[in-house]
Amino acid sequence: MATRRNGESSKITVSLIKADVGSYPGHTVVHPDLLETAKREMAKAKQQKTLLDACVLNCGDDLELIMTHRKGTDNRTIHQLAWNTFETCTEVAKKLKLYGAGQDLLVDAFSGNIRGMGPGVAELEFTERKGEPLVAFMMDKTEPGAFNLPVYKMFADPFNTAGLIIDPTLHGGFDFEVWDIIESRKVLLHTPAELYDLLALIGTKSRYVIKRVWPGKGHPKLPLDEPVAAVSTEKLSLIAGEYVGKDDPVALVRSQSGLPALGEVIEPFAHGHLVSGWMRGSHNGPLMPVGFKDARCTRFDGPPRVIAAGFVLTNGALTGPVDLFDDPAFNPTRQRAAEITDYMRRHGPFEPHRLPAEDMEYTTLPKVMAKLKDRFQKAE
Image (cartoon, rainbow, N blue to C red):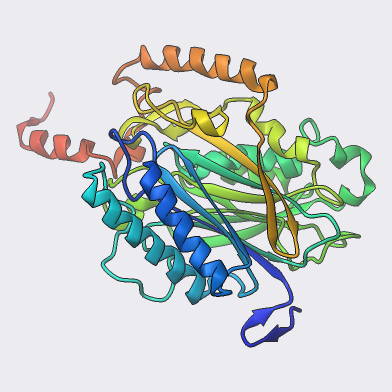
């Protein structure tokens, strides 16, 4: 158990909090003035000792704050810092007349915890090891379930993660915390014993999403109560009751020394698997892994993108980031994603490019259906 003094823990907490507070032109990229504003706010927080360290990045039109501290997860001070930073950036966005200024800030005032207020949150609290590699994944134009397949492959698929076979410290497997984001409930499933049960759920990625991964029972190197991966599961349409934008999830994944190696953590993204979101949150398309400079969704507001920022933690300090997908080895994936994009676009408004009816409930399509409902007649 972590010791606490003056509210501080002996453990390190990494908080990755994101929001779309304005972009240009349209839903393309975060304006440099917003990035500089966020960096100034993070620098102030470090100077005031609220944070140990911070890094400001963006994936497409989403502004991401990566913060380290010793205050634990769901901490009011940290969450208010993020909220205030997003509000300050929103004011800059309004002055610049940027598109969707403050669109992810779904309430008028901070109420103690940023969860359920619009921004996405992924947090890990753990005891820092002798070596602590950490990857922050950030996606644009997609939903939280987009992480289901890659996180499963990292921690449960031996065809992806060789360590599950050849490293005895991984033979105890990992526990997956899966959330039902429709009915607000969760279940913990152990792999490999409950692998089929896990897949039965997370294949329905619009409802069941991986929230955290924990070391399996009896792991020889890691405390069982310290998570090794976390994903943001905030669903904007469920919070607002209508379509207000893509969820654009983020994730934190630890690696090495009793965990999947760094290469095993980023390998799943060489697939370019199909995810939901894209234009108006209403279409399926391939997830394209790109370097920071290419995290701009322009073709049909897509295709969906993912970036990976690699760090090493040193007493809470972030050494990095390394732009992990800025590697020619991912060029074939990007080319394949571009070809799949072209194929999917040729379907136009037809499924499977457009989402099935049940997933369109919180898009703008119901307004069209409402206009037509009185014109339907009983068919003989």
